[in-house]
Length: 373
Ligand code: FES
Figure 1 (tube, rainbow, N blue to C red):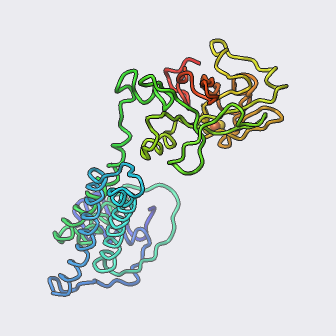
Figure 2 (tube, helix red, strand yellow; figure 1 turned 135 degrees about the vertical axis):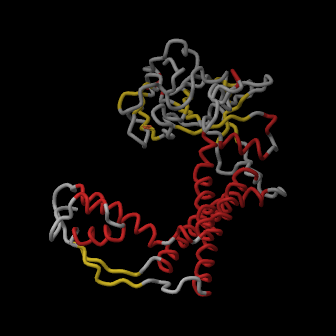
């Protein structure tokens, strides 16, 4: 706001003015002309007004109930994977749609409630204001505060306790719904000591069981193991860990495919390339002949990196174009990734199946503070 029109009131006059007078003065000073104004409810307390109040409150109540339902479902609904055909598969399948439905209703309820309130209770008015340049003098600041207070009274929320309470309920529950999912991010990554999620993968040996390299066929219950002659020279395949104890266990077989640090790229180098390989110190026996196995999880930000160019023996991560040299222990040679892809030690068993000799010797995926290489 800036300089107004007509005579300016003195400081004493200004101090003695009521809020209404200040509002009128402020409008005049701002060159605002109230072209049209109609009260929605000139007679207060009518049945129609109460009805309108209840309909707005109902929307806010819907927002609150739906948001609380979201919180309840988020906390208590069985969300863990249940294989197709099991009794609980339906409950598991409904988890995400129900979250979406309740969240949608919560937001819709609050949004429609606010719009309905504006349409039913805020006076219908048209005001025209001229634009001004520069900062606001003291007079403008005082009249602006008066205008804001007047607007709050005009909106009338203060005296509509049903709407006020239902709005508080709806908005409060919606806020709770919004922050609730953050709880899932609060985890102690070191919980479990050496068995903590950050230190283990599906390739971590357990119970002296052999861990085979398993091909992904697109069907979670399939078990196709890989023999050393299965890959052509220059070929690449994504493989996952498999233990005999998992055979027939759909849940375990599916979990092995879904665990984010399990995917490994098995590469069979061409003989002329295999002769040029530079091995990393401490990993000299991690390969089996021309077969090399590296984590598929990019060390930059965790994307699956598996665009392999046989001619140059480079592996490209499609997310930010990091390139890894597969002839130099998957060392990054271009792009933002700063660390080599972890190598999985492999060999074959007495039947010729490729197996893991152990886990990765460094953490998989984006670098984190404990990683030394
Ligand atoms: S995630 Fe691979 S380059 Fe960024």
